[in-house]
Image 1 (cartoon, rainbow, N blue to C red):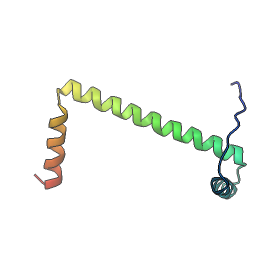
Image 2 (image 1 turned 90 degrees about the vertical axis):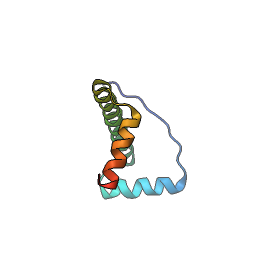
Image 3 (image 1 turned 180 degrees about the horizontal axis):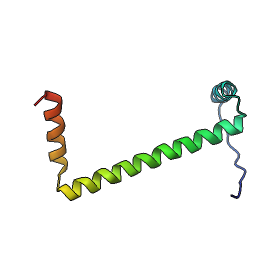
Amino acid sequence: MALSTVNLTFDDDLIKQIDYFAGNQSLTRADFIYNSVKMSINRKQKLLELYAYGERVAAEAEFTEEDILDEIKKHRTGQ
């Protein structure tokens, strides 16, 4: 895996928060930022996969968006 250097600019308050949480986890600032970015990307990827799965299931079952909203309303009202 090739590595690249990235220069970032953060305001002082954010740097203080980064340093605080990095210190609590015994991480360097760079490692904390690296792990945070990886975690954010992984979460977003999982969310995209979940949306794609939902769209596939809805298409296969021929659900419309209105059908789904109706089911949500029924569930919320206890019907």
